[in-house]
Image 1 (tube, rainbow, N blue to C red):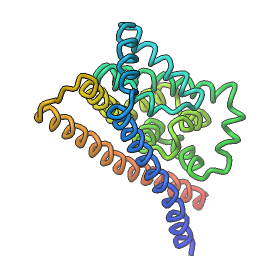
Image 2 (image 1 turned 30 degrees about the vertical axis):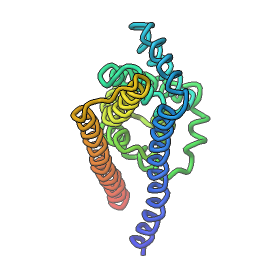
Image 3 (image 1 turned 60 degrees about the vertical axis):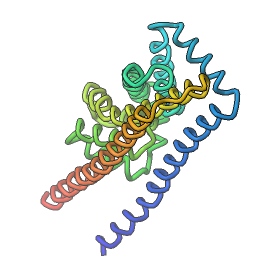
Length: 259
């Protein structure tokens, strides 16, 4: 009877999660589609080129500015995906990835520290009664680094909320920071790659020049590989996270039964 109830609850939790994943994918496709349409049909391509030139004129301060703004965005719950796409658009894959990696990691750490100090009561109220957070909190006590890493690879909370949620757990700060940095890299590269692709499309539309077929094939092939890797890693991480949490709950249940 208990197993049937747990299975029903699991299926009930799975439906909203799938809906959020589909919504996130739809939003990404809409952003990319709107950007491409704007660059082709509207004067927005001229504004984007101007923004690119202005940021390039900042030299080394351009990435620093974006990374600093990313930190503020993490603390204030601003959407990081837009900033990540923008970093790829402005700086290219390598510099964009480094910029976002630094900004998102420092921002996640800043939100974590805020959650452990001045905002602790507010965060506790937000996650109170959340069964997913309760399961994570329980698992973190045993395998802090592993749970944070898997949660970043397959977030069961929105990114910004996850930063604050972990502040209520007993995870050591350095483990949280390192696991967060590693776990966010695959998604960062994918978003930055998409942003860089938009940059190349903008240049092509503005200059009325066409890239060679080889360059286009390389871009789309690289994007496909990035997406596939992220999807596969996300599925593996989600499965591993469930197993880790289930193992923790099983061990605790056996401990209570034997005491």
